[in-house]
Length: 314
Image (cartoon, rainbow, N blue to C red; front, side, top):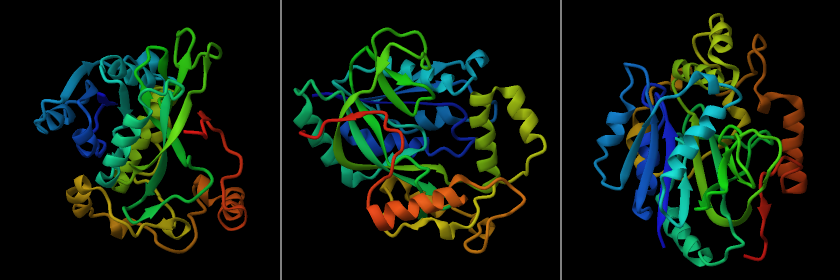
């Protein structure tokens, strides 16, 4: 059995993505790691940082992001597929540049891949998610954040990155990541492992820069630049008391990055959200009520979109 890791990134170092930690977190169980590195700004050194890992398993594909695909996140799916198509494993382990796996899960993941290798019903593996917010001690418990996502897929040319690259689908024919027809949800099995998502843990000014970059590939550069021209310089995370408190250990590869955190004095740990900005989804009354019902009454998620078909007998 062979497992390939794959990812994509652009301006990762400049925007405070833990891409090096992400790659290193699964290197012990993959036979190769393919990463599509988009040509970044002159002051970004992401490619050099990935090269400096110094592991022969890592294969870099240099790409150029075409602005015509800066629409609803399509460029992200295109870049994901570039890396995916260069993989040679039986299973393909996808991590976005802000996602990290704790070392305690590696044997579990590897064993699950071995167990399901010959069960061709299974097209992917479904992971739990922990979405950190503001710092490394708080994570989302809100209904507004996806609790599961597909992160390992079978190496099948019919499987492509879907929409803005959050997930995957099986395509009968492929034209683009957002085509309306000709695709279906993947059949997946659960794996008893979790993805740690650090995409919303950055110094407030870099979080705002990341938001601008993210919205650029969804709205287009012109609209995003116009919007952020009058936006605050720093991102407002809001009161962290509305989130869950993380009391476990982080992945070992994150130790140095966590030790370098120097923006706690800029965070709000209590009080009410700033009424002069639009509320974050988890701050709204609607989502707070749904979250209360999920956690205290029903003890399970209520509704929500699922981009997969869960096989319950595997």
